Image (cartoon, rainbow, N blue to C red; front, side, top):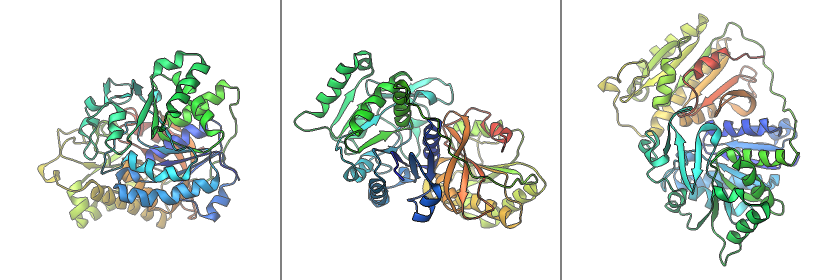
Length: 455
C-alpha cells in the first residue's frame, strides 16, 4: 500500500482543509488523528494521500520535536515522495510557539532533499504572497491587508504577526537561509524557470528553504511543477497551507494526469430525532459575527471564567443543552469574552475578562464538547452532526472522542470542510463533523452546516 503524499496538519481545522484539497484532486485520502496503528491503517485500504492531524501549532519547540519525530519516521516508512508540514495560511507562529523553523528541523532528517520548499499563498481563501510578503483578506471576500497590518493577525493573542516578509519571519525562527522565487518568474519559459530554481539550489551551500510566491491561482501549476520535479528522485519536505497540494494537483491537471478516484465515506444509521450541536470556541470577530447570524439554533452562552473555575455553572449549561437536544432543537454553544460578545452585545461582562493561558481555555472547552457528545451517545440519542469552531478546541475535542480518522464528505465554504468520522464506537462511526478555524467561512456558515444533507 504505497502512499505518494503525506501531510501533518499543525491543527485539526487546517488538516481537514488539506484533506478536502487531496480528495477533490481525485486522490484516495484519509486524515488520521495520530500516527496510524497497524489495524487502522489496514482498515483504511489503498491511499494516495495520508494525513496526520496534530496540534503542533500550540507547542514549544521541544514539544514539537517530540511530536514530529514519530510522524517523520512513519512517513519515511510509507515511502511518501512529498511530506507536507501543513501550517496555517497566515503563517502565524513564533520562535517559542508553533515555530515553523522547529518543525522543519524536526522533519528534515526523514526526507532525502535537504532544502524545503515553502508555498506562501492560497488564493482560494484570500491569501497571497508577492515578493515574499504575505497578504490576507479580512474574512471571506474582505479587504486584503499585509499580514502585519491585518486587524486580526497583527493582534493574535498567542502568535501576533509583526512581519510581512516571510523570509524575515522564518529567519527569526531559525530558518537561516531562505531563497525566493517571485511571481514574475512564472511568466518565463519553463526551461528558464527550471534554471532559476536549480541555480538557487546549486550554490556553494544550498539554502534551508526556497519560498515560492503565489499571487494568483494561475501561479499554482508553476509551483507544483517545481515540487514534482524535485520529488521524483528523492523525497522532499514542503511547508505551507493546503495550496501545496493544490499546486501539485494543478500541475497534474495541466499535464492531463488528473485522477478521478473516489474514496468511500463511512456510512451511519440515521438518527432523525437527534439534534445538531455546534460549539464556537474561537474568540475571533469573524466567528462572533457567524454566531450572531445563526438564527436556526438555540444559542447557549458560556463564560470563560465558568469553564475554568465554576463546574456547577458548567453543569447547568450541560443540562440545558441536553434538554434542548432531546427536544429536537439544534444548539450552538459559544464562549463569551471581553472583546466581542457573540450574542450580539457590545462585549462580555467584566467577570468574563479573565487571565488564563490559551491552552487552559482550549482544554476546558474541549472537555465541554466531549461531555455533550458522550452524554447524547450514552443516552441512545447520538448527535446528527457536530461542528466545532476554533483550531485548538477542535484538535483537543476530537482527540478525546475516540475518533481515529476523518474522511472527506464535502466543502461548506472555502477553507471549511465537512468530514465523516471513523471510530471503533458504532455510535460515532460516520458522524458528520465540521471543524472550522476562527478566520474561516462566510457569515452564514453555521446555517449552511445545518442545511447540509446527510445523504
